[in-house]
Image (cartoon, rainbow, N blue to C red; front, side, top):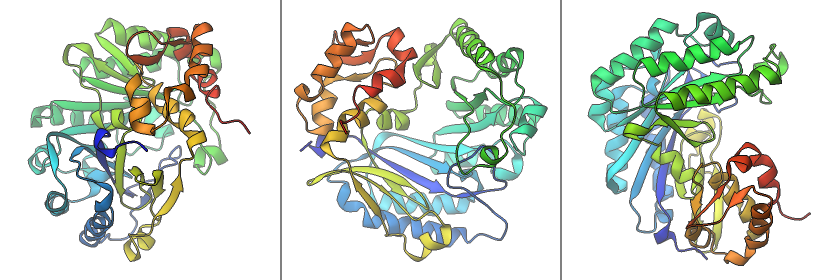
Length: 382
């Protein structure tokens, strides 16, 4: 079995409410149509955390990520309550990166300096687009000026780590539209951009009533020219959808832990976690509905990751990174021998899709373009 002491540990916190459910969103989020008992929900989060303390196994928490929903709907008083409870139960590293997702509309967040004051040191703003028509098509409640103001206000408040989420492949989006969104974020001095393509997911309004999306030729042009624009402005792509300015390289440490097959506790309605225990590696999830979670926050749906599934699970995460993962992580974080994955890696290397020199496993430029094809080699035999 892998040694948990060699595996970093993070904490994910889910705040499940939003002002309005977006038509493309398949996350566990619920419109806040009635007054919410935020105090009671934070109490439930901290009780939930107590039930997971045995998974810590002497480790410090290296990152915390607060996702949703819209986490910035949680009042500042409850963030104070939340972090007081977390610090009473867990030990954080001295440089623990604490990220909160926020939306630009002013009705959805407090003054940004208040988040810094409670310990949140990285902000991820869900901008998606700076164009009025595109925001309307996505069901967003903010306008372009609110998005610009939110970025500027966060910078002025003192956030040194600031991520902006942008989407491409939007309904009726042109190449010019997509490049304009990127250029606006660049002009605002943003140091990290999560730039990902809109996908139509089951159980969303877009799945039931799919809008007209750009054809494949336009999508290719958007991706290629968008990448060129980012590179020309000093950004490097370190993951499939993540770009950071090279001069002050600030990758998302929490997401890096996911991609490097680290462990993470998870509290909140619908939260998902992964832990290494003496009897195996497990994923787990919590009740999706806030009312059910409040009643029984300790209820966990466990799923063991079978040894035969570990090659795919590990590579599905690690090969998303441009530089891949250190070779030693395979044995340290799965407990399996190198010989388990060596035949597939040699085969992919001989096809020019994976690079094995040095101390990392990573895709070649060609392999990164055909990542799904690479990952198929690690699927377990039927």
